[in-house]
Length: 185
Image (tube, rainbow, N blue to C red; front, side, top):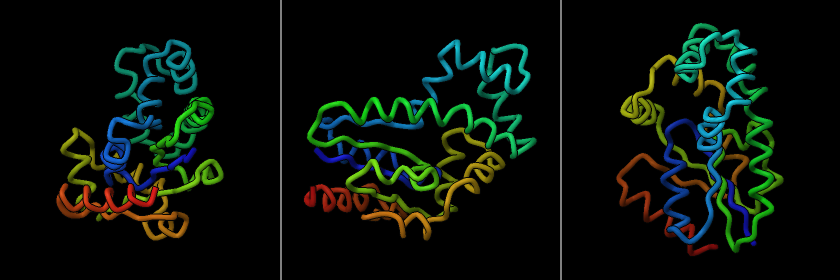
């Protein structure tokens, strides 16, 4: 059984690489999807409303982004609520059976989760390219900067990883690198 941790900076291509490695054969845990799922849970929404003094839950995700945009220290407060819940889901996923399990976790290194993985793969991409990708998906430049500054830079992430995939070129180039990695598994 191999647990693969995929990390990388914002909009570097972590989800794409996770899908390519999985090929539909292996289970993938996505921290981002886990967070997205939390916003559908009443207990979580109530917790966030209380923590950030939000009266109406409608559009709560946008309200949180606005709060973070105006006070980047609030991101840390949000993480104190979100991260333990995501870690709990991750630990459940770790216990599942499977030859290979893939974990897509942006803050894997920052949150010292290395010990859970047999192989850690960093997806690296140039900042300008990542920003373009983020904006294309409807993101905001200020939020990108705040979230990007929360993460270790590529250089530091790479030092803590077993394998690096560079996602600065074409999809074909990315697939070639992923296939090279898959041969090692």
